[in-house]
Image (tube, rainbow, N blue to C red; front, top):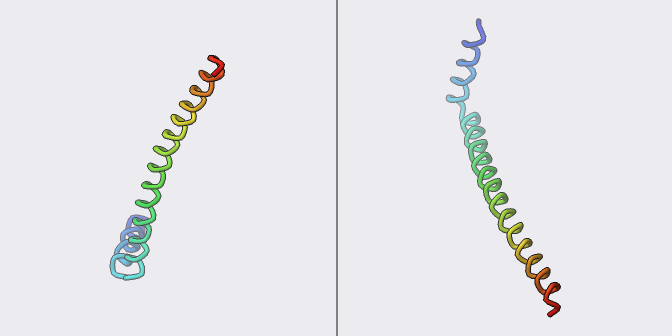
Length: 67
């Protein structure tokens, strides 16, 4: 048998078996949650950097004016 037939047989067996379907479903869920976490952390880090920059600029201006 060639490699292509083996791959098709593997996927056909996964489609028939419930365990294979569960595994694929869990993998998709984990991938979706991971993507959501990456997006959230990226946006959160941008917001934190912006807040930190605002605070340091405010402290610098307070130090410069002597208030």
